Image (cartoon, rainbow, N blue to C red):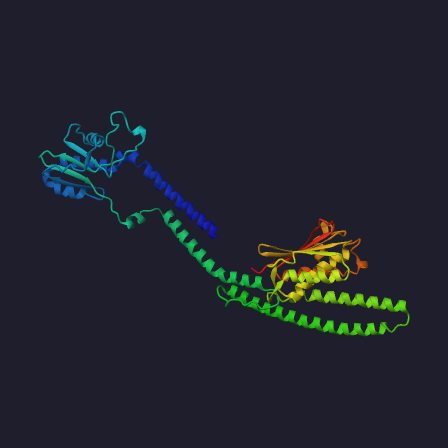
Length: 447
């Protein structure tokens, strides 16, 4: 409705403006047909034939808003006036006195130069063409009748009161539309601040919401968002406590089972029991790590990705893996976050490449503009293009070589993505020039 009201108001305003422009353009064409010429001719005829005793009353009656008539003893000074023969001919024709002592004048203010071609003939070309400013006529008793055009009143009020109703409706509509727009922006300001607070909220810490203002519905929404944040923060805190308790209790029982399994006399049976317990421990650790992902604290310390990656690469190289590192000497590859959580990402990405690579793994640290990257590549079977997004889902495994027999739980990449997003970064999969997978961790750098 606001847009419709504004559009209609602009349409009416444009129509009034166009009408005024057309009137100004057509003004010269109808200059010689202005009613004041006919009125002046009637005044001349009336005073010429009237009793001289009645002239004062007639002069008072015929003088009005357009013309003023008076009788003088001598003709007015012609300085500043321009003789207008076309108007004289018309006045003489209307008074029925073709040869009468009648003069018509225009002035520079009422002179028009650009009239329509059909209104100008060969005889009147290059002659003055304008509106009637002054007309004189010598009465039978020798006195001079002077008819002068009254200058238009310059007050704005008569002009405004003379405008069409549609113009007033358009002005009123434009004013209402402007007031509604200002009021709407004022009412939506608390909603914008509330949107910013909800966007910043990550579940780990309460985001303060500005003092509720505006419409009752917006104030109610602000209070509801505050209550929701309190509930979410409380639920996540309780979940963290629950995860810690489960982790402690499960590991206690797993340790007891392992001690008992090592006491089994049959070596083959003992090895299978220990292997199952180790697999169970790894599954529980990765699952609990994924559950803790949203509780990652970020933005506390500056972490040098070059040093962090170098330590992880050195550990895998010490275990016999064919792994190479480039970019560890990049001095400005520094990000803000939790060093333990970021190392877990790097460990998952490099461990994934070492596990599935055939012979070699290449790791690189880069800094480009305001972003830091850790690129891990291997020469393994790679990740099919159709599954490069799905591999970051929890418990998702690619068939063929990347199946349960490799010992994977399907949570490594999911945990990596979860922690990266908590730090404002991303993890994506691509194809490596080595023929295998290329995993890229991108994090915002400290400027």
